[in-house]
Image (cartoon, rainbow, N blue to C red; front, side, top):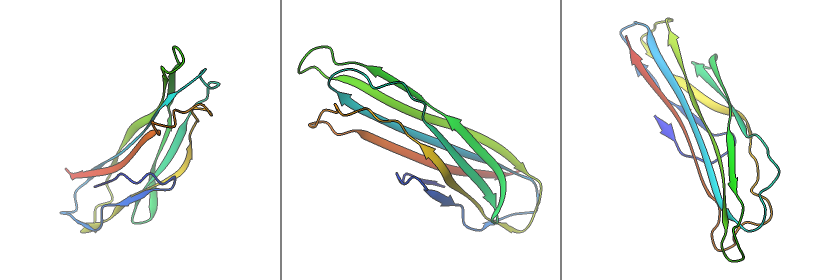
Length: 140
């Protein structure tokens, strides 16, 4: 199950998942990417971050806390834009031994701090942004 919503508080749910009562391996993954063509110098360095909570039936079972990276190549010459890029990605794996016949897992972004390419973004090439939040679960 995944969502590609760009919302700062995006969430996802597996819905009720049938089970034989065995333990489950739950993987929560997150990816954010933003890139923009810029004119002029690179902005001051900054560190993007995101925190996502993983829940089982509304009870927190894991936290994915991530710091990202920013890279920037300044404009080379007038009319030749540089490139600014921001990335945050990672995953956690949780083993759920609680059991149960029907289980629902969900995740929510509870904090997200993004950086900015600055005021010199190329107006003809708006920033490209993508975000993916996903949960997979398998019963052992």
